[in-house]
Image 1: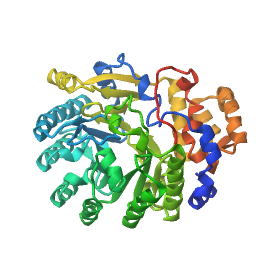
Image 2 (image 1 turned 90 degrees about the horizontal axis):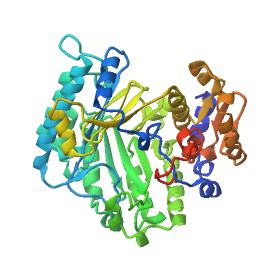
Image 3 (image 1 turned 60 degrees about the vertical axis):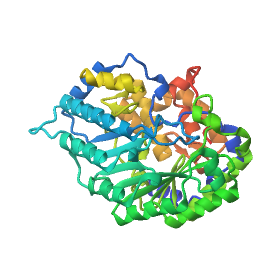
Image 4 (image 1 turned 30 degrees about the vertical axis):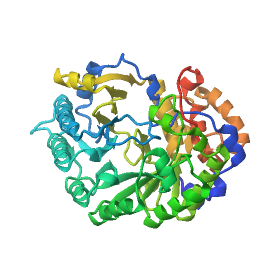
Length: 477
């Protein structure tokens, strides 16, 4: 990103980003592009043996690794949630699951050839997601981290990004201290909304006092970065009620804030059927909440990173975007380069050696594969050269809000304007609407196009252009 672009991004205001007429015109369903091709295109032709071959092939690569560990358990169900989870109050179910994770960790490390004489590729990034990772008790979490550190070589605390999603309702100060002691240095916490009526309607009762206590304890124990998740479009929300939540969060001043759009898809996610559609804000009120939130966060000094993410000016996400090093994966925006991502646990997805690999979604299938000494991968996708090209184009659009055609021409040996002639022709309408600026050597997303970046990226999605039927996505706004 140029110096001019950096300065322009830092000066953006809500009026630059939010254009109601354009949002109404372009607000259709589309992928979030945490992967390309998107997960609905994964298939069972890519199996455990394909994964094993790929791990062996990349074993001697020098690029760093990223690890994702999925903990599926939650002790209560939040009605808005669309994540892969197991709702249970039987905490004893965590122990056998940790055993399975340790077995999978050993299987991956052995296949990569890790051992006393070969510490292997350095882990620069670790993320525990869910579900609710803090469903595990302190001893189970400690055991799991020790197993990971025993089998993988980790970067030091200053260089590595080791994050965990937590639920403050079941997280004591002792747990915060343990998490920091065993190596986590970043924390993400779901808040969504502090309004009591909203919390009751979505079955997530989480007081300001409990939340802020945990956040303060995290800072006291040396967590380097704290992210807060908020959600607009939930039942009973208004501009005025959500403004109070924003005031509280801004007052705490987290390093990052994610402002997610609630996508009401009860036909896909059974818990959402418990939400009364009559209690949802009208489409206009939902847009009003979004516009107000954007203005408020920008006025508070946060930088709009992209889609639904905001960060402080000195945060690593902001700096990575300014340097053209921002990346996007299944956890959202990331500062890590395009390194191999190894998924561990039920339903987890990895990206290794140019392919996506997803673990079984059913516990019996996951445990059965590991019991027989096999990887629990049940589907995936191996990218073609064209997939890699389009993945890179979409990645740079989502992260940089710009494309330099010459970069792709050098890397992929193509004539960009000829290769993407149909796509660039389709973008002319967006250019007329002021979403993008097209030139001979590149494309620049204008401020009005930043909230609609998914629409712009969709133009380059070969599979959407083929109009594959039956794939459901959330609205872009």
